[in-house]
Length: 159
Image (cartoon, rainbow, N blue to C red; front, side, top):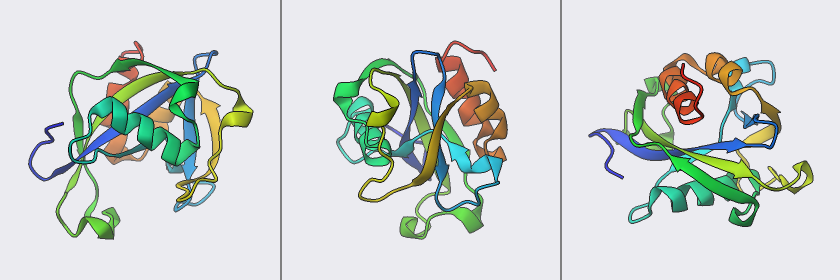
């Protein structure tokens, strides 16, 4: 993936259940009452890794859901770049990136709720739920809203 200069290549996972709801996790670094703490799984693309492989790896790392329990349905044709406010940029980025260029990958969940396991080796979420994609997009932190609207387009729900 070629991200614009200054942006970290990233994938976002739109995990859809049979009822058409999407997976949302509450970040463990945000207060429980903060509606913007809820997001879809996402993470960086490693050098030499294709988008689908990165998305499947990130999905398992963040939700415990293995690739055997999903069907990849679509990959967004372009990435959506967003700036992260400087005070919130991860320290491990060492000022290399001003934000992320996220490419969405839509997957159909084939498992049961009992097979989701957010207590992973490096947990990012404190709790999770199935939710309406449009409501999630409207409640996400403002700097990610355009990226989440791009996710709605990939779901066939124009923003």
